[in-house]
Length: 479
Ligand code: SF4
Image (tube, rainbow, N blue to C red):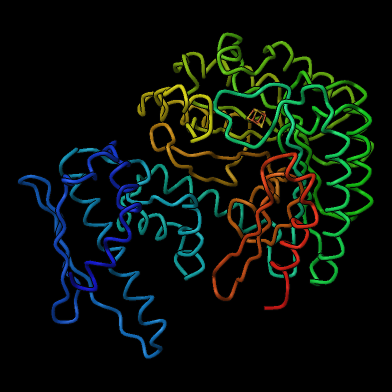
């Protein structure tokens, strides 16, 4: 086998992702594989063809030449990989006749490509054409990226001197059917106190690390889980620690996802702590669906929670909804969108259902909803956000999403969440505390990212807090 062929064997998972765009199942790659590849180097060019039965697609590209041998190897591999995926994409289009919404893009951050094109000097119109022509992205999605890039370019720029803080509270009152997070149900609450002890220790060590690394705090995000699932006293302690240990951030967000975890007292504590933004997430405003997905609350409780938060004077509420939930069609999703308009959130995140590996839906082999219907829902979400005068400002994709769609965050002008952009675009260092938190260090010049994950298990996290601190120190040590 030639060196080129051996290398292309190693990218099979990426090739399978490309085929998945066309609903071609992974089992078609098992031996005997449905597709056959022919790859060779000839006259300074890579020539690649893929065949499936009697259908063939082929193409070629110049082999890059670099004087630096390390870069040479890297660029050669990149060119071969790109071509190989592109030709497979062409073949799948031929055999299925489908046009995936995101064209040949399989990565989770398509906004990067748009931002790169703009940074390279293209006009927004030319960048849209580039995505449509070179990556077969539909015009609708390319224009969405263009709108997002325009908003992001006006936001305070991230950079090497900044770092965000994430504080994870891995407790929820019940577990949602699609959840793949580490959150445990809060049960009898016996783990709350030891968890808070461990978290405080880790946060204090993290603040020192931030100082030693010479980074300035940018945004603080308290997520989970559902932080407001904590009892009032533990929540007050958490908010107090957050402001004492990490003062002066430009933005503080607390997720208050489940309405049944909210009380007037907790909302008061949140507002007094100076939090700028909370998130109250219905996911759907249909009671039957809420029951099926195990949310353990009703649509009325969402309305009541919004009213209570407004009465407290909370001025920025984000709302998360999911397109493609089990048993829902376009009319149910439109109902959720109508209710969303009545509740007047300042920002709205329209997710597409993704069935992740460790979720109950995956274990139960629940099917993904129809792609065409999901795409209509996503479009409805976008139109609703527009009616509410919101603009899209961040977007990401996940594996196994219904209809190969995406998650998009919309906000009223001036209400964009810095942390959401930083985490999704991977443009800022992140110090993450708590079970399941993943700290990230970006190396902007080299264009790469290193990560230090905390353990997911709550008991393990409590026992091994020292080790989690050491991992972060190693991540941010001089390199
Ligand atoms: S609220 Fe979020 S973290 Fe909690 S169970 Fe549901 S999806 Fe998981």
